[in-house]
Image (cartoon, rainbow, N blue to C red; front, side, top):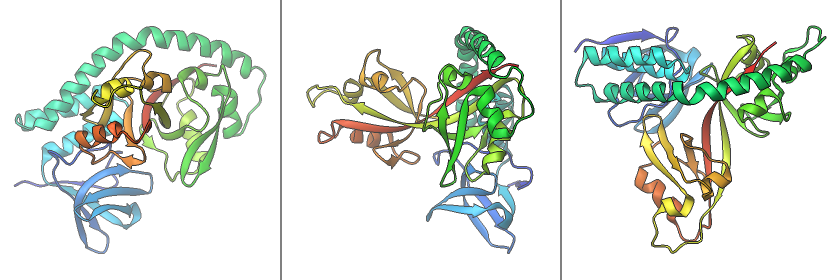
Amino acid sequence: MKRFLCTITFICPFVLVTPKGAFGDAVVMRQGEEIKGIVVEEYSDRIVLSTYEGEKTIMKDAIRQIVYDLPEQNLVKLGDAFVARHDLEKAYFFYDKALKVNPDYEIASIKRNYVAGYLFRRSRERKLEDVKRMQAAEEWTKSAVAGKAEESADKKLNDEIGITIAMDGGRAKIADVRKGSPAYLAGLRKNDVLVSAWGRLTGYMKKEDIENLLMEHGPGEIRIEIERKFVVNKALTPAALDYVSLIGGKFDMLIDGLTLVDVKEGGPCETAGLKKDDLIMAINGAPTRYMPLARAIKIVKRQDNKKVVFLARRSLTIWHTL
C-alpha cells in the first residue's frame, strides 16, 4: 500500500474525526517512537491523539512527523482543516478530490454532501441576517472609535467589537460583552468560552495572541466558535414519552459529532437558549466525543433528573466596520 507522508510543519488544524470509518495516524516522535491513533484536536503547541489506551496529549516540539496510511485520508483531513477554518468551498474541493482517488470512500462522500448542503442553506439563510448585523455594527463602531488614538490590543478589541477576554486555566473566557456591540449582536455573552477564531483553537494560546488573532483581518467579519452551558428544564410529561418531547429538541450523530438537528418553538431547549445546529459537547458533564447516540438519549431520559445540562459549541460571525 502506498503511504502518504505529511510533516508536522505542514499540518493544518483538525476538527473531530469520529473513530467509525477513520484510519490510523502514526505520530513519529523525535526519539524514534511511533504512536498509533487518531488526531482529534490540534492546538498551537500540542495535539490530542485518540489511542486504544485512551487520549494522549503530545507536545508538538516532541513530534518529528505524522504519517497517514492512505492519500484519500489525507485529503479528507485537509478538508476537515478547511471546515475548521470555515472555508467550506475549499473543504468541498478536498472532499471531492478524495472521492476521485477512491470513489468508495464513504466518509468523503458523506462529508462532501454535508458541506454542499450547508453551503446552499447558508447562502440563503445568512444573507439577510448578515446585512442587518453589518448595518447595526457600522453604526456602533462609528461612534465607538471616533477620535481614538493607537491602542493596546485588549482596549482595541473592547472598543471595536465590545468584548474583554480573560484566561482561565488555559481557556479564553469572555469576561464582559457590552450590550449593543457587534459581539453582543452576534450572540456572544459573558462567560462564553472562546474555542477558536478563524479555525485556530485558542486553548493554551497567550491572551495577547488571541486578541491579535481576532483583529488581524481588520474590519469586516470575525469568525469564531464558542462553548456555553445550557440548563434545560425537562417538560412535565409522562415518562413514556420520548426524549424529544421531554426537551423539545432532537439530536443526531453527524460528521462533527452529536448535533441538535431540530428545536421545537417554545420548548425547553429553545427556552434555555439552545439553537438548531448547536454541537453538543457534553451532557450532564459526560463528554459526547465517543458517546453512542443511544447513550445520549438514555442520559436525557433519566427520570431522577428534572434538568439536563448541555455543553454546546456554536459558530458565530461578528461584524465590525470602521
